[in-house]
Length: 215
Image (cartoon, rainbow, N blue to C red; front, side, top):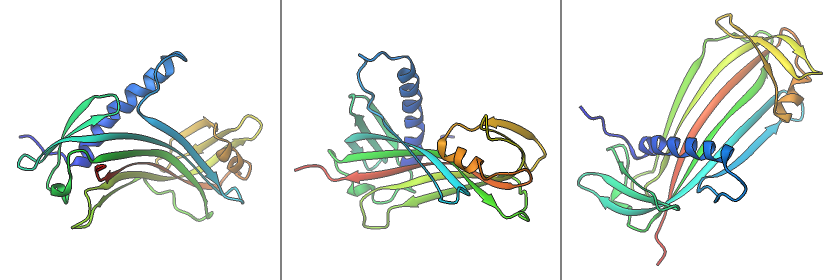
């Protein structure tokens, strides 16, 4: 039995492939290669005290609505490079009838990690997975977003500030050693000591917005 996809989840699947191909092509392409339709931006931040930091990659792609079948609840999109994809919008997608041929669809994909120093008595909890779905209100233009966050608390076992290396143990007792690359997390590393507990959150989200067609 076929399981219908929401417009958001279908876009996640198609864009995941787009991003993977674009990333692979970007690594191997020469300076003369044409620019990818996927625009990528890096953002990061750290608190003044250095007790929390975050790093995020934002990938954005635009497409135009080429065709709509309200009976079958399908939407055909064409990207900037002329590639076409047909998506099935499940019943969870509101206001589909407001979508028009020629409407511009902007999709933003976020992925990143956040770290926060916790109190000494914080529990080393198991991995927690959180899902979120945001939909357009009735009467508004179609749109929304989906996201997932995975959170866990680790304990610092070793810190090498000269080499920017940290060793930590997770809630299940597994120890890992990593080299910190991001400047924001390196600043946080300077404040860490053995025995500290840090909450790590790995997140990804997809946001979809629709703009009316130009007259």
